[in-house]
Length: 310
Image (cartoon, rainbow, N blue to C red):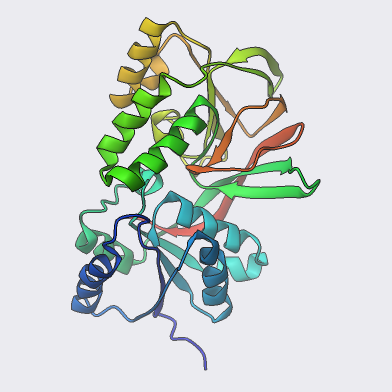
């Protein structure tokens, strides 16, 4: 039996470690029912089940799929879509109700995790924009070629460490702000420089680097000028600053003026290569397996239909 064209397929991804999953869904359900939204919903048991459930929704014919989750859950969803044939992908609209440990991509569009009513109202209007995705290609330890898409950013080096600490702290502390501040404090005890060789367009960077952010969107404040619809990736390469400069950089990051720091070197490109690096990598806030040898990143222009605010 075919699914109604206007019926949403909702994937609810509970926040890990909060113990509030049932209450959170009941609150959202009240908003959906109060506005007369036609929907079916499934709940993920773990991050590993997200891709399986999104694939199920796609193959069952849902044309509007809404992820109730954060950056990582949305990342799983876009990777499911990118595995489908273009004809299938073109028929699906992807929506987001922020409910994750980290919701940076939702914040880029103005979605607020504390205002479900506004988010649902926006989604019901059905305003869609084709968005870009970044793509990282690498070889893993098993010798397999891996291709992973990202809607927000890839971090290499210290920022990947911070994102890992931030996620762990958020699960422990519950508060996004406390998690961010505690991860910055813990960062002081982490390694601050990594030997890297990067090729960005015709320029080669071969030196010690503190962190690199390749942003399709704001990249947790590190690529604040990036937008996911111009066919370009913004890249921020941060050399290892002195302690005083590091503190200044953190302040500029928090206040949205990260690119003003003297140690930040911004680029805009369609593709780049990491020819040499042993630093930790994170993809949309989730720690990735370490690439073996050289790996590359590029942008795929306007490949996903995304529901945006009015």
